[in-house]
Image (cartoon, rainbow, N blue to C red; front, side, top):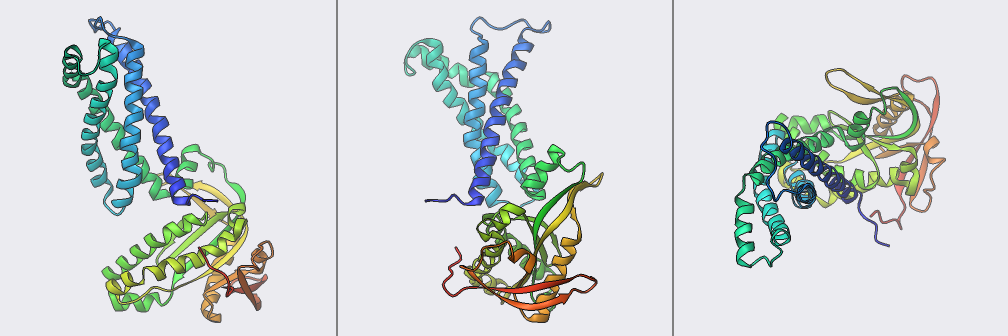
Length: 371
């Protein structure tokens, strides 16, 4: 059975939302035009005006525009230019959409003109009506409106990318206006020997390394149903909803998928920085409180002992010279024996904590192939 990648699923969901919203906006534009044409300041509609035809024209423009322009935004602009300044991409897509509007106008003319004239598109009457359609001020008005809609859409997509899909929509919906208790799985991951690497490369090159590294690990995290909670220096915090993390042991597979991805890109890192970044991680699960904070800058934060414990587990990786340490609490609920082997590190009192916790080192089994 062919399984669609998580990144593609997210993009298709974004495209579907754009299609629905733009078609709805097309309907709103048709109603607005209708009200203006029948307002006291207007001389009224022309004899050939039809509200249903206007609805079809505007909703159709929204559909075609979403399929063309929306696909361009989702699958090209926000992939190819995701490291560009926000203002740059908004300006580029707004200007580019003028050309999309031109294409949409030609398509709509080819569909609507024969309906209006009752004759084939290449008949003399249809040709004349076609020319009048594409040179009318109506497409220019719609071009201005849709360019604005595209700019706002691109801005919202960039905000979604900045906050993360779950965080952005949860802020919009106000899901965490009131703090909620939830069970989550956390992975704290950081780059080995980061201080030495920073001294060797210098600030600018080290920043470029972090930027490449965080960009490269994003897709494997998404493919394993994780979400990036935050970046802290050379450290990234990944979070899973409890069921998503334990399903198909995604929280464990994620770490080794990251290793595989960086290994596949080793030539790039050696060429640019003269090294291949290695990393370690600690994983733990438990109950925490999720809530929205901030006035000028809003965000959803997680708080609770589970985060502190996961951070402490990460710190033990260096002490035990292990790349991945997982709490026994988490392993107890994972069916991992087919793919991974575990080794007890002992019952340890983590620094700054009174409660003891059993830590386990995790490695893939010899027969395992992480996909």
